[in-house]
Image (cartoon, rainbow, N blue to C red):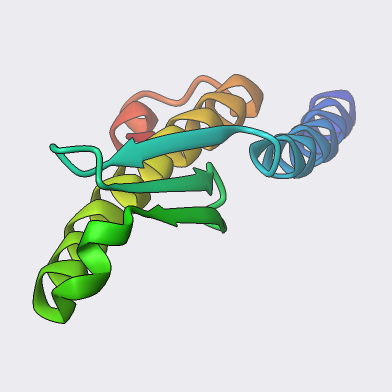
Length: 108
């Protein structure tokens, strides 16, 4: 019984280290998103840190349009980054979890 418990604790510690490494790696995964007409471009990490925003000069003439473009494009970029982040972390966590029936639904 103690062997099983010690093995599970070791696996848990290993999984925690893998999750930490995955979170650090997500800082290096860069996603690019742009408005449909490519006048606004955003780069963001999978950890949802904005790295750059490029705005075409034509958007600087219309404040309302620029604000709309920023909201739409940033939200799309954040959504993509969140999906990648959650999928990567769930895969690492699932790998380290004991096989308990029904747990799959909690990791999705």
